[in-house]
Image (cartoon, rainbow, N blue to C red; front, side, top):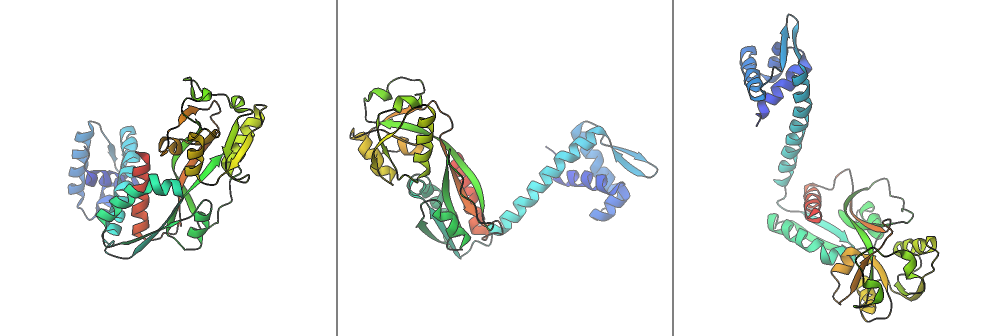
Length: 300
């Protein structure tokens, strides 16, 4: 494993063009810096520098190691700043926005980990069904918010003051009552098979319904909508009771409180991306820390 001090010495020589100038920049004597570079060459098992009367130049091996060293040193500097920020989490408040599904199934363990690590930070959580959370972050009502976007659908424009970081992508799947004919089989179901099926769906303007109906129309089928419900908990309950079928995100299907039949759809273009919205100018170390926890938690 390479020593970070020696990597920094090699980068300094590559930028200064000589060991003497690099030593002056780093506060070393030239012989001391030469010793560090000689140790690095032994670690690398290759000649990294060629000395000449005007200074020193990198070999091919030196060029390769410098490119990697810059990345390592940049990451270490970033970690130093983040750790310095964590040291400041001795109070204050963190305001979080979320939509229902993520707020129930994904956010609690992340907030619990944050609370254990930083008990002095006051946490508040507010519910915003997308895209309301984006506007809430832009207006300063919350420090960050979880939101989602469906495909296919026309993406909503973002305010210039916010940034969106994707965390999790999931397919939309067909859900039915247990034992329904469409839930049988291991292959993906063509959307055309939904033609004429009673479809429990959301409001006409909701992106999931727009995407499903577009996929059905492309397959020559038309959805027969029998119920328009905004909440997935009610949709899954009605489907489980045999009142129709629905197309929902995988997370909704897997965590339903009622029994369901689940089938993957042939069209891979139906999906939902869950993201965290934040202000790129920074909402403080608490928000940055929670975003890091969200990346780790959602990735698992």
